[in-house]
Image 1 (cartoon, rainbow, N blue to C red):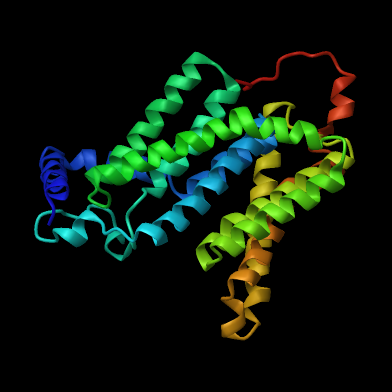
Image 2: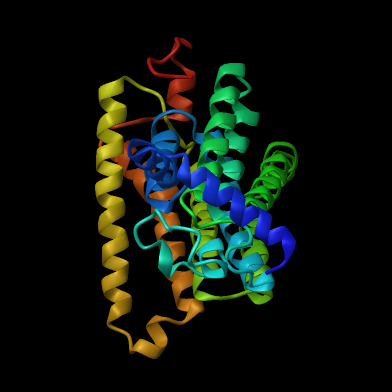
Amino acid sequence: MPDWMRWQIEWIVRLQELQPPWAIVFWRLMSFLGEEQAFLLILPTLLWGYRKREALYAATGLLLGSYLTFALKDLFAMPRPFQVAPDQVRVLLPGGERLGYGLPSGHALNAAALWGTLAGMVGHPLFTIFAIGLVLFIGLSRIILGVHFPHDVLAGWGIGTLVALLMVYGAPRVVHRLASSRRQGVLLAAGAVIFLFLAHGTRETAVPLGAWLGMAWGAIGESWRNGFHPGGPLWQRGLRLAFGLLTLGAVYGGLAAVFSLLPPFLSEEPALRLLRYTGIGLWVTWGAPVAFLRLGLARSDRAMERLPADPQPGDF
């Protein structure tokens, strides 16, 4: 074992020895906040009920970060601490023993990409402090739980921060230039996904690439009909979120059932997986918002522009 790994192992062991039983529950909660299930609650809540524009950029940062995580893990093929020193590092996360490569930490990278993008776009000092604290705790949790080296987490934070900066300062300029031509936007989104898929197309990378393609196409299509406004009274936002999550689950399960009918060697193909998640992304940014408008659970952006600009309860 090289020295730079040995001192990190010793640090992890000392951190684990300092944790009382209740702290392990806390760190597992922090780790959960960096997982897909948490993002599936956070992003739809923002997209359908609070900050549509910011949520779209944050989701883009998250999905790009997820792609980079899988691509870089396969590139570096670095072990995790419990694989290097199984007699010293305890895995304090259920199922953690089944995890694959370590570098970079996907939890740290994705948290920095998502919350960094939101902090940069919201621009409120208190929210920025909250976002930074959450990113730090999520990354630290992966070290204490024994599933990542400190260098995995540091790399994740660094790459995720770069992704967030790209979303805050670079992506809006591209969107602004394409605003006059939806066709160019559709083609550019497809071209970017095809390029990234050809660069590293696996079952894992097909998920974020497909989800982003569907989300981008859906956002473009939804804007053709003036778009829906995420504001409204809290009860209306709650109904939108409940209906949206229920239908998202139905779409997710329905597409899984359809693709399960294919022969096994086809259903697991990365290209078909990409197609499946494209459909899920389309529902999130196009199908669900159109349903909100049809059901009277939301108003269009144009309709809201004609109303007095009163602050909505719960806006941050």
